[in-house]
View 1: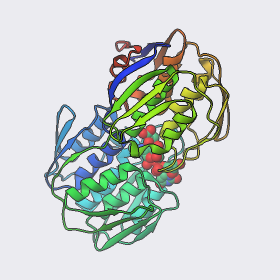
View 2: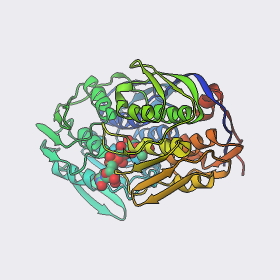
View 3: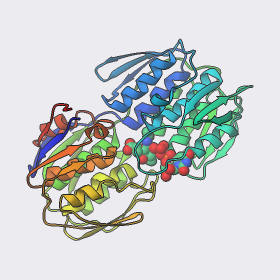
Length: 421
Ligand code: EPZ
């Protein structure tokens, strides 16, 4: 298994082009299933999760061609309505293929999805919402047999939690439903808006309101479209955490700062200087950060749970005590044990992490067990004295395109070992 080796404490500087969004690419690739045509998707990152979505599309009968960051998806010949368990288990986002499949074929046979081990991650909101649209769902031996005998009927769905995936699944399942579907307490993440934009470019009618309401008016079919995926706000925040921790001066390009403005205040409270130009952002840090008292992860537009791990790593050497509350997932401190192995002083009580800043971190052999926990270990290793070896790199490759090349370009001493054994 390949490893990433990082020799710490280099300051970081230069310019970084941020990749396209994983969490926008995945639902838009799933949406291609309901499109009877050819779609061209630009700014699609090279990620193993994107490869997993492509494998599902090809299994269903689509042809997918990649030319650099552009994917061309021909979904005119879809006849298969089942997704094998091993493809479903590759990632969490496989579950939103369900909504798209029932829109296209009125039926689907799928399994519970995989994804990061950051909590139980049930799909009850997905299933109850799709049943409300008239989908019959039988669960047998882990498989979900789904059928819309008379098509789906628009209705009003009020989500008990603004689930990103459930919102995406409802939108994908309702684009051809009879009449209007209204989702209340829908997720408001930018990835939802990007999905709606793509579907509307395909001839659908999806309206994302400003207060967590989404309205979908059923249409007859969807044609192909050309679309550019939004920038990845979590990747931007991860690399910002690295620069803040190590010290440096970096210009981030291909970002949309309106997608993470709620987090800028955390970097400024920690002592960074930000120059926010909308599509570019400059971050300057002396590497001597101040603790941040009160970080609480919340649904968008609050502090994103996906940035919690890298920001926790950034605060390990901040002066003072930082308090981080993880409100979205019940098991999202997998990075803490490994950070403590590197000399961090962190106590976790339930959903609260208390980070007492230490003067320095030291290199260690550490293991990434999920995507964002892995990114936190990279941030910490860049700050640590000595040479850190990070195993479990496959988790990091799910969401970060060529992470070692990006960081090397900014002056980090980072290598990826060849696949061994
Ligand atoms: C999406 O996951 C993202 N993944 C996650 O990013 C992100 O952390 C999460 O949204 C929250 O922003 C993708 O977009 C592929 P949720 P999703 O449904 O849709 C509970 C990353 O690192 N819930 O909004 O699975 C759930 O257990 C990944 O890129 C139910 O109880 O998130 C969690 O506690 C990790 N029942 C909360 O809601 C359901 O049916 C938020 O989950 C669905 C969710």
